[in-house]
Length: 409
Image (cartoon, rainbow, N blue to C red):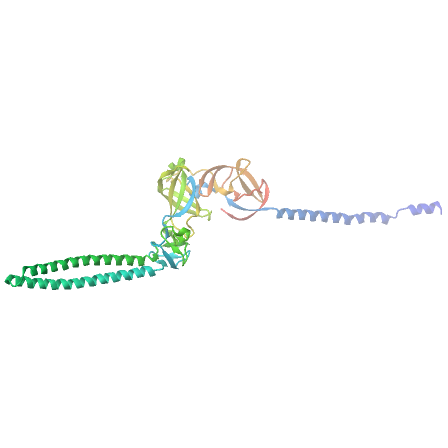
């Protein structure tokens, strides 16, 4: 092979030089597609990590028309009129005619006791009264006969036809029968009194409702012994049921004696049941009980509901806010805005709210003021119309990505 042939083999074809770059283009396309997919996957993953929150709009304080709370307290719903119904006598239950939740009216029969002994005593009293009445009828007949004998003896004695002894004996008989009739009349009165007692005992075997209300507890069953006093070593019931007059429901709270000067009779109150935390119930102070509890340093306050509702049940927990009287003429609207008290949390020793701007929630330090029911005044750090998270959770941080659901203002 000559040198010329060797040089010709080392020569590069122009078509081969152009084919190299063309084969690199598919690799670049694949890299770009992978980058786009990676970015899309990252965006999808981050969007799934957004925290779902509920927002509320900060409102001007002047627009709420609310009264400032001068004092907050907790207590319970009570029924001023309730009774554990028992029997007046000891006996065995044969029927219980009520169940929990039943509404009863005054005088309605709730239960019955075994009345066989009471009815037997009633029959005995009736028989004794009948015997006493029969005895006085016999004595009245004897008295009339003795009076006729006395009249004859007096007539005969006037003519000297009888002895004085016969006249005296006739007079004694009249006096004796008169005295026996008076004694028998007293026996009749005793028999009548015994009859009335027996009738009462029979009536006591029927237990009736002392007032209209709702049965909240049934504590005895047929076959059990009941008594007005504890007896029988724990085997005797002292109550049959408990009745509550639902029209007597009210609130009873204990107020620290250091702040009782902020409470007055007739003062408006806003009550919130623990069971319905967003239901604000208007109420007012009935009375301040004029004594303090030494162990707790509190004074008891009674509060009446402006209107009773079936959802308000005895023994429910309740939070109350004693409101200041509204000022008739305000020269200037009160400053600041109000948000739900639950929107304010403590972070790093500061009161903060989370303001939603677009898809981000930003932490903002605020100054808080008075309470207005479930609302709280914010003096600075927040403007009217800004949206804040209603119930911030511990996972919320400054600048976190959020998704908002239906908002309330």
